[in-house]
Image (tube, rainbow, N blue to C red):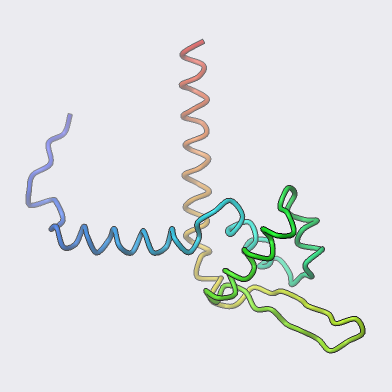
Length: 125
């Protein structure tokens, strides 16, 4: 086991600051659907029913809440068009593009983690 010297460790303040930042990010992206919704809308703007059709398993109530949360955090924009009936189209904002690297890293880590778990399960059987 490799020993870590104290000088290599971040200070308590640095750890607290980093933890606060991570918790803020997780709070905004928390839940089963938010990242999926952002990815869905980055591909193209969509109406509510199109989003619900594309993201299997999400209820109308949950979708409405998640879209509202994402709009409040500037990840998506809700556009209302005065047609008959009224058209509402959701689109990803430029700010949502700032998650590109984060989502890429999460995807890579998720793939590694899945493989690790598969290997562990094979060893146990």
